[in-house]
Structures are given as C-alpha cells and as structure tokens.
Image 1: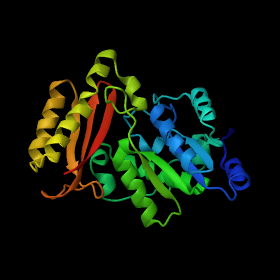
Image 2 (image 1 turned 60 degrees about the vertical axis):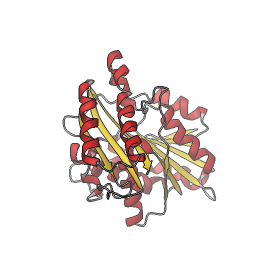
Image 3 (image 1 turned 90 degrees about the vertical axis):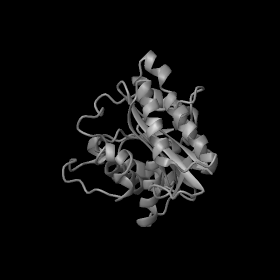
Image 4 (image 1 turned 45 degrees about the horizontal axis):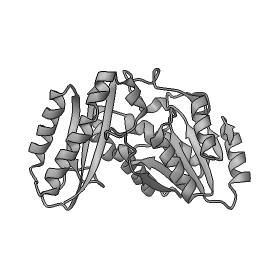
Length: 281
C-alpha cells in the first residue's frame, strides 16, 4: 500500500496505477473500526483500485466540539488498511487541504437537507462535510465512493450533491455495522464510560420499537417520537431528536407513506450517538 500525503503525489499515483481500472474511494476520519473496514471490503469487491482517505476535517466540527480530542491512530489505521490490500492511503495535513487557510474557504452547501435533524443540532456541520468530500472527489477522481448508512443524512446529502453538481461518481451506501448488542459502531463510542456503554444500545432498541409500531401500521408519528425521547431520557440520554422521516427528502412523511426511516440522535456523557432504521410499512 502506498501512503501519500500530498495532492500532487496522489494524482501521480492515480494516473499511473489507476489508469484503465475501476477506482473506488473510502473517505474516513481515521481511528478505523469494523464499520470502516466493511466500507473498504465493499470497495475492494466492486473496484479494481481502492483509495482510502484519512483526514480529520476541521470544517465539520463546531467551536465547542471535539476536534482537538477526536481519536487519531495513524499507525493502527495503516496496518488495518494494508491487511485489506488497499492500493493507496491518502493522509493529507490540514495545510495540504487548505493551503490558503480555512478562513475564506470556498464551500459547498446542500440547502434544506443540511438544515434538518443533525444539521439543526450542529449548524454548519454538513457544509463542512460536503466541502471536504467534494475536494476529495476532485483529488481522487473515483468511479465509486463508499459511505456508511449509520449517518443516513450524510449519505443522502452527498448523493444529492453529486447528482446536482453532475459529479462523475456513484455514491454507494453500506449497511450499518453493529456491536453484538446492537450499538452502531463509531469512533466516538470510546468516549463512553463502562456504565454508559451498557446504556448505549438503548438508542437502537428504542428506534427499533418505533419501527415495530410503524411496521404494524401506526401513523401517530408525533406520539411515537415523544414517547421514544422520554424513554431515552429516563435511562440517562439527552436526546437531540427522534424523528420519523421520508428517507429521500428527510421531511416528515405522509400518514400512508409506505417507506419511512426512523432517526435518532442523543448525547450520553461525552458521546453524541446517532442511529437510524428503515421501515417498510
């Protein structure tokens, strides 16, 4: 596996080694776990040349969020990616990605979708995501890009960006990777204390209960959302939201809509956990 830190070197390797191959990219912020590696596996299965990127993106962190303390484990990540036969790891510095500084940086914004759910709780977060993902697409020039369904809103926003800006890349969503007790894998799970880790799977369990009611025909969306938030609060969470939405527009669905998605975000100790479940009614 080649490890490159500059855009120039990445483009050189992309031209030489990626020519006449199907190129896939897996954008990550590092501290890789089994969920990230599932993305790599999907990419390796579907593409002949795999690029993984590792960049902790400062633009997607708010002023009081955990950018400085976000887990970083470059040696560990290199080892995991080498074991998966990744062709190139692109691990740029902040200065490489923003040579003119972050102030005044040209940004990419996907309106409406970016302002709901996690966008309401974390203003500007998705503008940071789409700006850097668009830069990574320009740098790596992939045919396919792989993102986890755990952050369904992010996946939806990136698909929307690609479609509206006519980017020549197909965005692939990969099913959420979970621990044995149902907790969605996340680098931020390491923030949980032992006691909090025992509570954490309740988020998935609560969303699954909502999904069961929906599958059985309930359309009392507001009641289901409020009940779920109360359940989470009772066990120690500080819920940002539980929301039943259209999976494509992220807007509240009609009462008879056949396919919906249940979203949840809640804070537990230092960690902010997110999850979602699709429901065919």
